[in-house]
Length: 142
Image 1 (cartoon, rainbow, N blue to C red):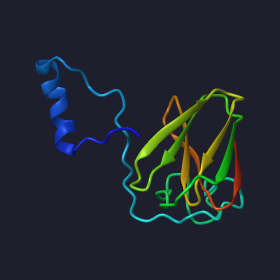
Image 2 (spheres, rainbow, N blue to C red):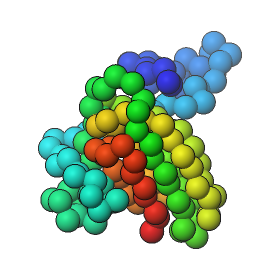
Image 3 (cartoon, rainbow, N blue to C red):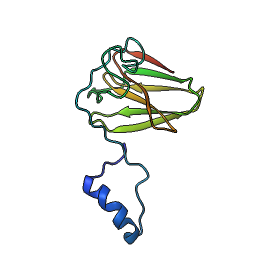
């Protein structure tokens, strides 16, 4: 899992990096600021991306803490561009897991209550998300 940096470190790193001879870290996870989020029932395979359960594509929850990895997620990218498969951890930090080329697919073992987000690689726009509520979930984009 990527290392989290304090807000002070994020501000000082660009200033001190050149002086100390070190560069910026390769990956700084995006922290999500969430006020309220409705969980999906997962029945539609889009995890709220279509807004049918009261949650829009820009309003996803953090993953629930759950032991074990007993659930399976299958993602199919039918978009014209590359898609990032991202786990939203229990503190709402986005953790990248895979990048799918157009037409590509990915199978992921995960846990109950885990939230997965799918972003367009070129624009970083969220395309869909899903919360794992069934033993097997399938997401087809779009």
